[in-house]
Length: 67
Image 1 (cartoon, rainbow, N blue to C red):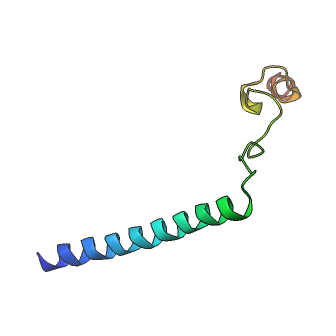
Image 2: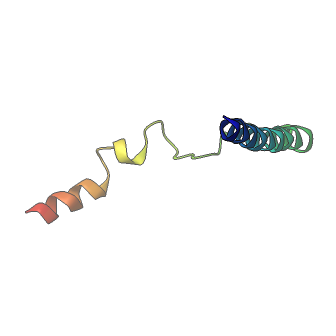
């Protein structure tokens, strides 16, 4: 029973530390870079992901390799 309580205390402590640093990072970005919206994160230039696009040369290469 005591070991379960110790595990919960350890998990709670790590969760609190992660949450603290995450919120601190968000606050830092909001104060120092207020115009950043994160739109350039994983920007492929179009709405479809590269692996969902049928017009790429990768599919042609794979088809040639199968022949």
